[in-house]
Structure formats: C-alpha cells, structure tokens
Amino acid sequence: MEHTEIHELSAAYALDALDADERQEFEEHLTHCPKCREAVASFQETASTLAHDVEMPPPPASLRDRILEQARRERPNVVPLRPRWVFPATAAVAAVASCAAIGFGVWAATLNNRLGERPEAVGLIGAQGSLIVNRSGEGTLVVRNVDPAPVGKTYEIWVIQAGTPVPAGTFAGGDRVAVTLTRKIPDGAIVAVTLERAGGVANPTTTPLFRTGAL
Amino acid sequence: MARDHAHLSDEALVALVARADDSALAELYDRFGHVAYGLALRVVRDPALAEDAVQDAFLAVWRSAARFVPERAKASTWILTVVHRRAVDIVRREEPRRTEPLEAAPQPSANLTEDEAWLRLQRTRVQEALRRLPDQQREALELAYFGGFTQSELADRLGEPLGTIKSRMFTGLARLRELLADTGREEERWNTPKFTS
Image 1 (cartoon, chains in turn blue, orange):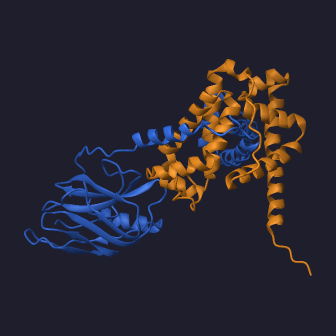
Image 2 (cartoon, rainbow over the protein chains, first blue to last red):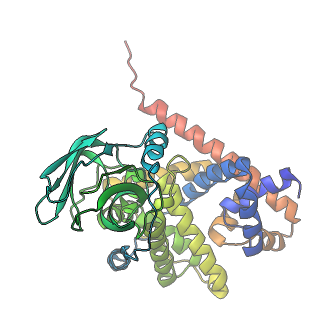
Image 3 (cartoon, each protein chain N blue to C red):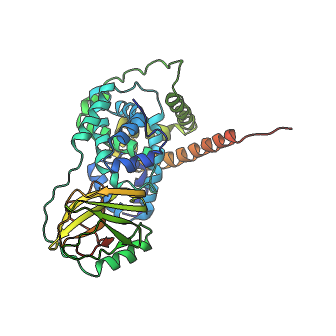
C-alpha cells in the first residue's frame, strides 16, 4: 500500500472505523511509522472531543462502586518465586552510570561489616541516608532526595542471600524516604535496589541501582 | 466523598493509578465517568451495555496505566479512546441494537456544578466546530464515531466509493482539529485581560 494511502487511515483508525483485520494491519504499520503514530495521537485527541457533543444522562451511582470494587480485587500481588539470580560485581557501577545518564535518582551504598558486629546504622555512599538494621535483622532504609520513580515504575528493595533475591518492599522516591524492609536481613546477605514496573515484581528485571556489602 | 486528589492533573492521577492507588482511579472516574458513559451510551444505545463498556475501559486503565506515556497523549484522550474502542467493539458484536432509538438526554439543569458548567462549555465548542464543517464530512465523522460503523459499512450505507469515505473522514477530522484550535485561540483571547484607557 502506498504510504499516503495508509497514512490516510490514521483518521479512520482514530475514529475506530476500521474492521478487525484493517485495524490489525494498521497497528502493524504503526509499529514502524512514527509519522502515522503522530497523526493517530493528534486525531485521537480531536475525535475524543466529539464525546462532548451532546448532553447525556449521568451513569448510575452503582457503576462507580462496581468499578472500584473490581479494581481493588485486582490489585497486583507480588509472588516470590526466588529463582537463583546472578549478581554481577560490575552491575552496580554500570547501573550508576546508565541511570545517571537518564536522570533517575541513583545512590550507592557500601555496608562494611563483619559477622557478629551487626551495625545499627550503615551510611550510604552517593546518597544522603542510611540503612538501619536492628539486632534481629529488621531493616529500614532511610534516604533523602530520591527522584520520584518514573510513571509506571517503582523502586524495589531486594534482600539477596546466596545469590537468591527476595523482594523486600517497594517505594516511590521522594524528599524523605523511610521504608521498612518486609524481610529480615540475615547475616551474610546483601541489600540492593532496582527500578521495576509499578506494583513490584517477583524477580529483579533491571540492573541494581546500588548494592551493599555483605551484612 | 472526599476528593483528596482534586488538585492533581489528570496525568498525575494516571501515574498514581499505575501505582495501584484506587483513590486516584476514583478521582479519574469522577472527572470522566459522566462523559465516558454518555459516549458509550451514544454508541451502544443500551444503558446496561454502556455500563459494561465504561467498566471495561476503566479497568483497562487500572491495569495498563503503567504503559501510559503522558508525552504522547492527554490522559482524557486516552481514557475516552479506550471507552470508545470498547463501545464500538460491543456494538459490532450486538449488531441489532444499533437501530434502537436513543434515549433522550435530561433537561438541562439550571443549577450547574463546576464540572457540569465545564462540560457545557466543551459541548458548545464542539458543536460550534461541527456546525462549521461541510455537511458530508460531518456526516462521515458522526456516523463513524457515534454509529460505530466501519469505513466499508459507511461506504455501503452512503453509496459512495470507499476511497471517498476515507478522504472525507481524513479531511473532516483534520478540519475539525483546525476549527477546535481556532475556538481554543478565541478562548485564549477571551481569557486575556483587556485594559482600556
């Protein structure tokens, strides 16, 4: 199909006037045509203003309740599966470099510690804050000035023992962050933070923004 | 119902929805639920099916808010686009309902809330822009958008070649965009303080 011809379909697509096959074909075209993606976005904005054309009756009040109830039932849950996860020694350095480049909040921490000398508070290097750990291994991460996680993302904390990461909470960033880890930190474990999709994931999918030394 | 998020932009609300904040979803519904339902009702012409379309759409927003890119679209456009797609899919599945008469809109109320007043302003703007559109282009846009017809169905119904229908929709939507931009600029002029000596 000539490009001008398929480009013209951006209007029909925005009006939902394509049948299922045409829609699928055009969506395939959209994946590699930035010009048509731009046209669709603009036409969708125009088309959606048509929704204001005529005054219509309001929805029944029960609809709001039904939507919110259903949404609450679907709230994402984190299911810990704990497959082994290799944590490359250079990952933290690489992550710091790449994340700084795209402007996310990055901090690094080193926890110098020895078995039997569990600290109360461990300073973070590269960020203002500490990881506070009590004698029974309960930990709280306290950090200041963490850039808010981008839309659809969350910071996720991991407690990693013997190479196996376990989710230990999520946070969104902010001027003052104080997150209590949902997992105890056993001796010899390390703690890391990655940027993950909102709601958190069962296993890390991105390189860590920081890692600690073994506690 | 307290509106804790009332001060947030639509896009900020979507960001909160992406973090599973159901009060942000409630606020989005309070802002767009009425328009969304009205749109769905116009397309599907059946209150129960319109509710289905709106519920499906808001739950789709709940599930996929993380994929919303605010640089690419306004949140209101995204939500209404999802609602419209759901409504069109339903009406194509429930073909016979399309010919049922549309229920009448309620009489305009004298005491408007702020939201209703804003909606009425939007309505005037859209109606004015539609009036200035050539008849054939307006007809193509309205039949496609509210009738849920595909371009091929429109060509059959109007007895025109498919190419003509495609052009009418494209030209009509482009012209409508210009007309809306013009009224937008007029609003800006209205909002500019004028000082006379």
